[in-house]
Length: 352
Image 1 (tube, rainbow, N blue to C red):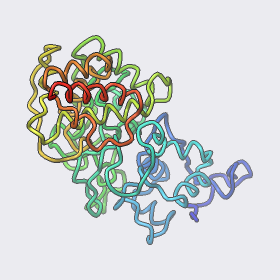
Image 2 (image 1 turned 30 degrees about the horizontal axis):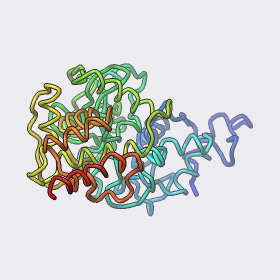
Image 3 (image 1 turned 180 degrees about the horizontal axis):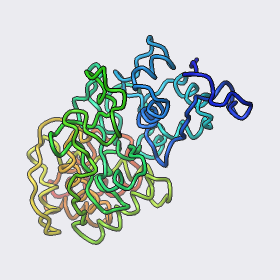
């Protein structure tokens, strides 16, 4: 259970939480699509406390938050404490976690291992060894108080749909991962670490990052990406989790280690896209740099825009084998099996 940082400001009945318990002296609510860790950092700053001091006082020193991915697996006691002492409805608090994407990007949430379409943090103690948090510099610049969004943890989203700019997955000045919780570490005399948009490693202001316009490779890709963005944000259900599962499978095939798959090259040649060298070493798709993900997602989206025509076309061009399309995909949707099944029968007939 949480402990209030101090007496409620004013001490009157208006300072009693609409849930239970006392409100913190300052209790800012989550901003639109704000990520849990971003919100916690803003609450600490609003109460005039360093982030670690705030967490120790409120959650107890026995609960270490920053050596785990709490955006992904926030314990109930943490969410309950935040809801109670900030006067925020529980459902609003829950929407600051990555659990909001359950049923849209992944089917079941598990506490360890790669979670489909969610960028891994690579947490080691309190450090971040991977690039698990992206950002749009224009969004940060437009914010009255810069904050980080839940959608910036999603691997399939590599551009900002509002500003049509490519996102960044690291500091453009020093290439460090975004880790705003580390800004005050090693600086005991610093009580105000500044806005969250300052790089913890070099103090670079992420709002100043170069704006890189996003342009889709082809018209059908742009249309499909717009629908995907609306689906992920919950604005539209033209897509489904079956579609994102197939998209993930096609991305895996394109970056797989099997030399016999030329699926990415086939799509690039077909639509006239620039040939971007992408590593085929064994690693999860979500662990790849944003430039590689952005490229491969566009190629895979092109196939998904007209799968009944384009997937068989790639197979007949010998750009991909049938077994690659279905490998490690036992739960593939019926419509995908209806596309790939005839390819197997056609292959058997050709070999007869």
